[in-house]
Image (cartoon, rainbow, N blue to C red; front, top):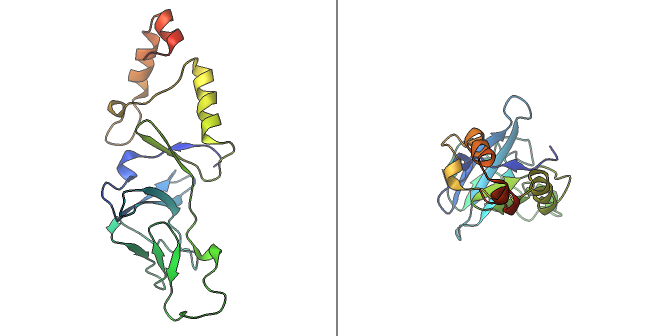
Length: 173
């Protein structure tokens, strides 16, 4: 999925030192992802598949300073970095960078978070193309979100259609 996706607001953990799993495009991609917030409140997006056997690291919302895979007990920081595995203390060449949970790009525009599994273009270029196509700079407002995380497209479209030519030219919505 080389596109940028809007992060569902309900999938973002509200508190520091917490994690919230969600599935990208259930029934289509079924990509297990995990939003985390560290002690300082910084948001990260990680793969929710353990790097050992692919088990869900966080099958449900959780809180704490680290994540623990329920399959073999591998432990990861909220930034996805591998911390430890039972029975591997002092093992040569372990851990390796590929033992970390995959971190995904996360970008913010206004109050919204966007992410991509493998972006085909930088976020700024993607937003610039959207702005150019619409003929104005696009901004998002929290009031435009439903609890389910769906953008109220019909209301926004009606607001755009009701703009005078002068307001539309200035990008005022």
